[in-house]
Length: 257
Image 1 (cartoon, rainbow, N blue to C red):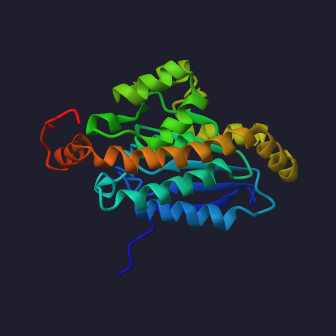
Image 2 (image 1 turned 180 degrees about the horizontal axis):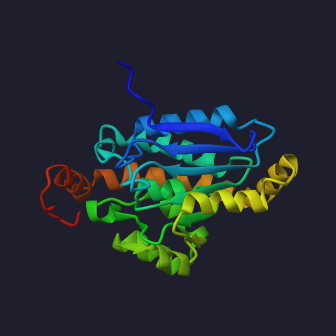
């Protein structure tokens, strides 16, 4: 039997709004299957001339626990990073605004997914974090994207400590644009009020105009960070030890090299 798709996609608002929903709760892991499904949907709908926005959300109690740790292992991480970053660039370069509704945990690759979008609306209990450093690695896409969303010290706080922050702190530092008990409804209301009545052609041009420098710089930065990750980090003992320790459910033994 063919496995169910990890993503649901459909058109709403008479074709004006593309709905994308991560559909593998509770974790909604951003693995190869999820990345491929998102890339396919973004390709399929990119040239829909009626689109005025996208809403990305998730089934279950959590947005996403992050990327697949197994796919970060040395024999698989090059392919994983390439496909993940290509899909994130598709999101970043999508020609209409992309809204994100977040509940529960939004971590690691899940937060990178949100960072490549636009307006983030979060439930009060949502948690945001980049815990990769705890596994002896770093988050390439978040390293490229976070400094455009928050100031540099706050970006470094999340990237270097691996700690999670709640929705109110995320709102205070500018990572989240709105906190609401029902983020999906709040996102739909915002779309109806601010985007639905606009010209799709004008929105497309305005999105390119607003995001042009961001898109070019992040594309270049991701290439640099892939090289740092693959050519330096993954050759260290601690990166391999941290990933192995996580999968084996034990404390890592760092050698600091």
